[in-house]
Image (cartoon, rainbow, N blue to C red; front, side, top):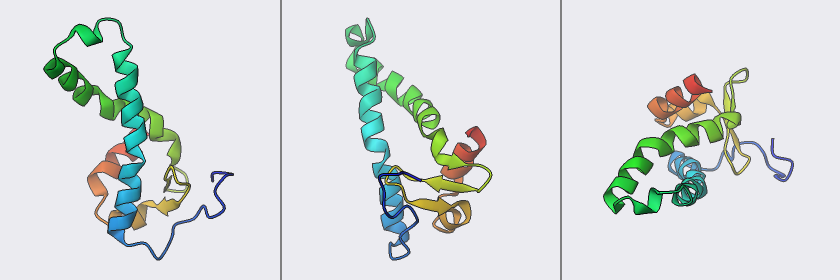
Length: 108
């Protein structure tokens, strides 16, 4: 668990929608960092905006998979969100996060 978070376990009062929102919001800063990184690659800015968007769409998910793989605990079958809240795979599956989580657990 995150040592800076005094409540590292899942908030049982949150709705599945709120939990999904927490999960997806954790990706926003990471996506922004990938875009900023790409802008610093020599020649990237010389590409058309359409080509830049295509390349970013094609590679961002994989970068995020690598980046967030440490948040997946295969032994315990849990996921720790960037906020520090930890959810079991069963809890997240019950909320309809099946395909995305399956792909991420397979990768991790």
